[in-house]
Length: 124
Ligand SMILES: [Zn+2]
Ligand SMILES: [Zn+2]
Image 1 (cartoon, rainbow, N blue to C red):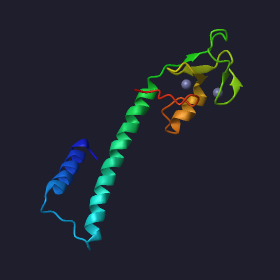
Image 2 (image 1 turned 120 degrees about the vertical axis):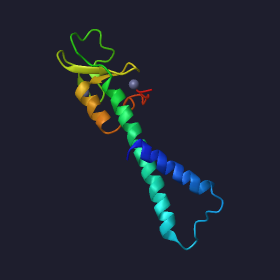
Image 3 (image 1 turned 90 degrees about the vertical axis):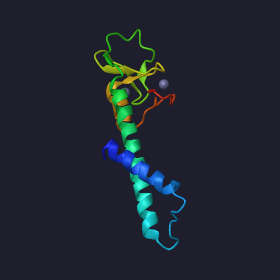
Image 4 (image 1 turned 60 degrees about the vertical axis):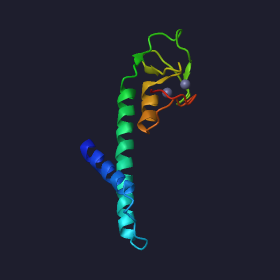
């Protein structure tokens, strides 16, 4: 659905609800379910957009190659419980928790938008 269409559907629903003459017939489940379907689809498309926006923000989190182990805030990646090794890629979130890039990316792919360790929201 385009956003124009979303707006149109929203306006239509609002008009219907604002119209005091409109009474959903008690025995007409069809109309009620159609209205519910419209509202549900609108909500889904809104949350889908929100999810895509969050995914775009996650893509902007930087990552880098581990060059030495001295400066790492954590010695192990708490997702795979494995040591960090020189040459691996890591991502450090804004809460300062560090994970292997491949481990945290797998976490993000499951539509998580927080740190797996402290659950701090990692996007604005
Ligand atoms: Zn890991
Ligand atoms: Zn954290």
